[in-house]
Length: 272
Image (cartoon, rainbow, N blue to C red; front, side, top):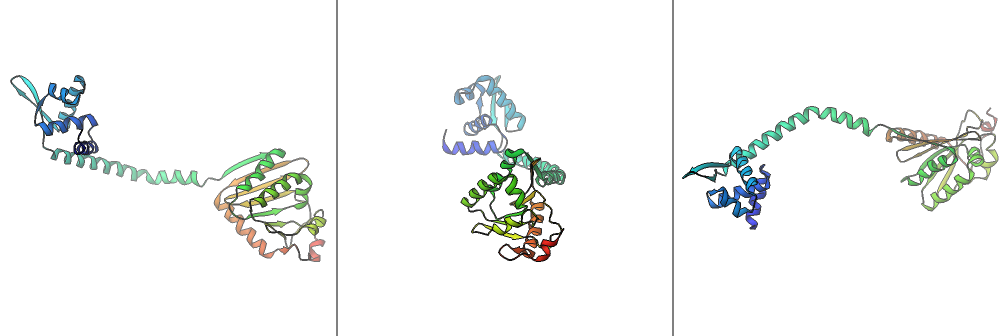
């Protein structure tokens, strides 16, 4: 097939013709008029297929059938019919567009409902907590942590140590706000900030009871950990808005907190 003919066929196909219909119409444009048998020979299409194509082209207004000495002949109608086909296609598209625009608000609502619906993952047991903590290694920004250091050291020390080493290897920064509990006093004195981890202690804490919980804020996630002899549970909530709210609250608490290197105020130790 010649290159310019191929271009014409592509145009005809874009107007709505099937490729074989375009081939037959192009042939008729070149030859003027042909019998069905001649079309079969020149296109190598099957006889039944050619008759079906001619029937379709006649129905579409691209070809007309006429009789010469009792034999049916076929000739193309003016190519302006193609322009009419394009106009018809444009009308169909406009109608479909109008229908789509009518339902678009409903589709947007469905999209938003799915897009902004928080996802929640639940983890249980030592391995479950380990998997949840491991998720933080995917963080692309500084991790913010509220933590009961005594509970972490007592119940998941090995998991925490391995996570901390890997986090530092990946050069993921972390800020930790610690609860000042009765049990954690000695541990707080032994902790110091380093290149990848900065510790501070919550100020004006209203209780010194062990909380046995940790909150981790990273990327668009908030991870809640509860660890004790009886329970090791983690929940990861993924929602950009909730994570943003927690991040704002953390940053506010961070500004009001006490650097770990500073002496803790006497009133912090006297709280019940």
